[in-house]
Length: 221
Ligand SMILES: Nc1nc2c(ncn2[C@@H]2O[C@H](COP(=O)(O)OP(=O)(O)O)[C@@H](O)[C@H]2O)c(=O)[nH]1
Ligand SMILES: Nc1ncnc2c1ncn2[C@@H]1O[C@H](COP(=O)(O)OP(=O)(O)O)[C@@H](O)[C@H]1O
Image 1 (tube, rainbow, N blue to C red):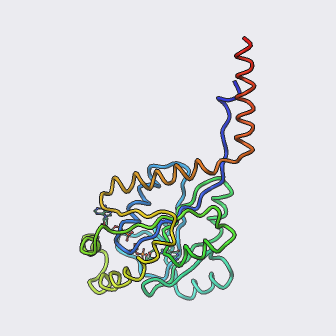
Image 2 (cartoon, rainbow, N blue to C red):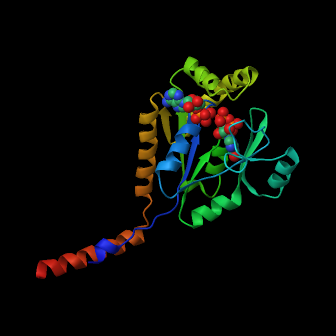
Image 3 (cartoon, rainbow, N blue to C red):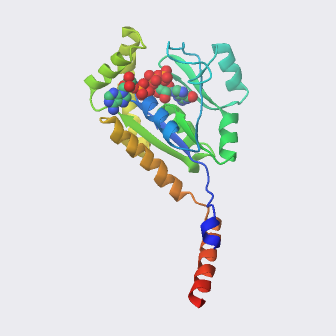
């Protein structure tokens, strides 16, 4: 029977997750990478200092301001922005390669980068999710519990959160990350539903043709 053997292809998704610092986007996206097949993370370049728990080339590519400028000027970044006083950008080539190979690509980038992807030719395949903290005190508590930033940095990030949060309206989905497990299930459901939307019509057509042929054969037998 043809129908059982047909693999239905689809276009790769660019799944963008943004949030104010400490709301939980890194935890959620790392979880998704572990549990979902066929998703790769876009590893950004940044001029920010590496945190003790971070590995160069895994969490970010940590580069100098001069290297960053060179990449941006030569068009090697898909998008870039200044966030919390540091520069961040998405290297273009690994994203294009992953999408060509049929993978979905996950982006942990801010609202400025999301706007740039939305304005690009890649826009039809961009799905964006904004993660909100359940409350202001809980956001502060999470930044403190993470214990990777100085008190001054935490204060600055809380101040910036008030500027970032109003951008939630520009996103396709919003998640209030109260219960981690529930938020993760919701993020996973978004990916599943969006994948189902992106099946190539020609593949469905040939699948349905095969199904109808088989049904005709079976009904005659
Ligand atoms: N536009 C853009 N934003 C990025 C990129 N990489 C990270 N960011 C954002 O920069 C902000 C700060 O990230 P980070 O320094 O890792 O701090 P965290 O949010 O506390 O984990 C977050 O909002 C990230 O989503 C990027 O390549 N482009
Ligand atoms: N739903 C949640 N409940 C409690 N703690 C959480 C939740 N989501 C994330 N955290 C914790 O909050 C801290 C900040 O999360 P993180 O993923 O690093 O945030 P972001 O990437 O948005 O800056 C981490 O210590 C993480 O373990």
